[in-house]
Length: 397
Image 1 (spheres, rainbow, N blue to C red):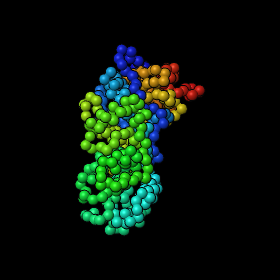
Image 2: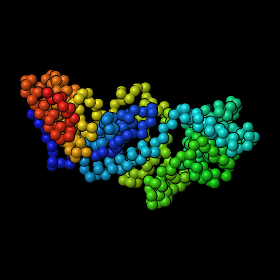
Image 3: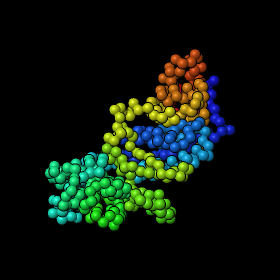
Image 4: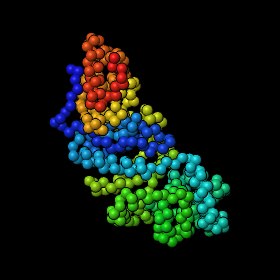
């Protein structure tokens, strides 16, 4: 049967997690970032009767389609807020930028410390990002090989280098393991309040010098709840973190800064979301490109339209079980297609013209050309009337 159905009895609909321009940096295609976010999102909510849909163009979006219950909507709402905040705070750093920042760090070390102090110092990087920064910094400071060898004991200070410091917990663990000697902490990126907190808390840290200051979004995001939020996180990590904030989310070419989030249902701290897909970061890059990576079964990437007949720009669509759900959130329309109606929709999207769509459908269905054309044109007009299909003048003739 060639028909279009709309289910009024169920809660079939669309939940938009993200829509609009995506802060994906210059290295990562928007499509890959959205799919990576979707692959993480499906791990955090019950996908029964739903699918997460990635729309790369024309207006990038990530949405859930299907039978959405109240519990699912609650989880999706929390995920949406986390994803939007993460992308807002994302700061993409290139190798060229790291090189320039290492030059700044070298100058600040010279300005902050006496030349004799640096001449007597040993240098060590916190694995693994700190080792990359240390390599670049060693050229900026023109350090001899001996100054970069594993330190044992020495009269001068130990300069500890890292790519970033967000809470200081990684530096604290490193400090507990290194020899008992004077330390200078040199993270490439850090918040100034964190640097001050480390200097106050650690008597043998004589200086905390960074190249670039990070911005703290927590006060503006949390408003009056900021102090209570800080207190809660201090209670959870009182022996690990020197400072609590929501800084920019750093994305380096080799990886991105680890983050943590509080799960109110499980009442535990969990690994936060990441921005960069594995194939775009050195840390977890597999030997395949993004087009070869299989997404989760509950994630579908909306294909790019091929011709003049195409989904209206706000439209999202995906397959749930044996049905196809097509939604236009702007027009408050959501329909469910099955059987030949679903086949017609997918063929229209894939081929973009009536003639090409007919050619594809005639290979799958035994129907005469006149009947097929009439049904297909009528179907396209119904979709256009519901603001689901863009139909240019003359494209149905």
